Image (cartoon, rainbow, N blue to C red; front, side, top):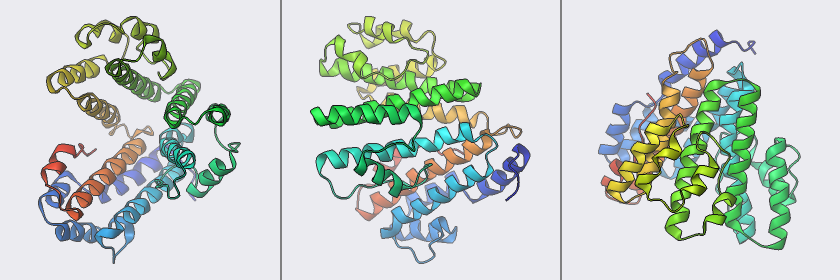
Length: 329
């Protein structure tokens, strides 16, 4: 295997990106029939399944995500940083597994493309043994298991794992002195803390419960959020002053006010985080093109899943236009 280096990694990724579905191809899939969409995927060898049918959608996506994660891990000269972004898939899988165990669900649908084998995560949750995971995440899971023995609280699973994941990501980014990763994960904390703040208020939850569900602090101070709990959404702009994502959050809040739907703020979050990566896509002497390729494959998978699901189930194609995310390219 070649020794990882930034020029070598960027050259390889440049070649790999030629295999991505572009915006025009995705639009053609969205506008055509189910058969048209599948023919397009087979023509570009998506998922390396030449005899695939629409029923094989998840297997095709799994194959692509598995290969993408393998490529990133093989090529990355800074695995401490690129692993943080792959780890997000493992965190999602841990949530699914824990909730499935608590609710007695037999089949848990897990995503490919993380740092850990899905079978290993399944075994860890079944045995309640997490020694192979990063320390912050392992400690959070051990504490969560102790609480769940007293009271079954599926909603606490996501809170505990998201908080631990982002605390770990911020700690690693700080230790590695990676300003991009710090900016990215702080912005993610800020967006999600604002979203949680708004949801808690909409539910009529008491202010005292807010701190129990918030993520680590990014640029938005948690104390400022608590102090603004009784203020209207239009009046909380001052809490955003120290966030690098303040303009994007403010825009999302304004869109939410117009539509009455918090989904507007969530979409603004996803687009903003993507923009951070896209803004570095041509920095060929850094690892950021690798992250760009990872994000591109993730967006592509969501588009493929959405289009095939809508067409297989005979839903209105307007659903695709409503939910289709911007692609990376």
